[in-house]
Length: 120
Image 1 (cartoon, one colour):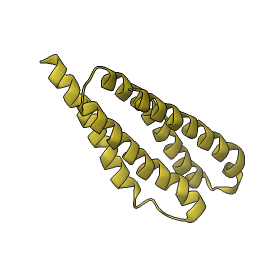
Image 2: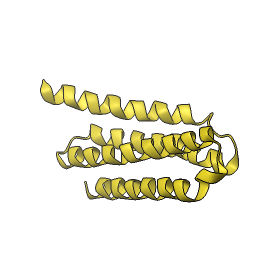
Image 3: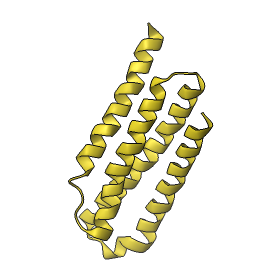
């Protein structure tokens, strides 16, 4: 549980730092579309940092499936948000982003499965 709170906190911090960095240091050098792509990466990053807090809580309740949801969120965030952040710095990498979204969706499916298991 402690590890997942640590991972959530680090992800939240990085999402805020990268979002603020993009706004204050990169926005003027970007087209409107480029900034929208970068911002989307930051938004997804922050939302899934909060999702990882939920994972930490579920892990604390000894729900093994929550670990897999957390892993999927982390991989998905790195691939999706990372690709959108890096696209600004390294050129187009957005073809990796859909793979990240698949991992993120798997994470949410696992969270839903936990809810179904606990409800029954």
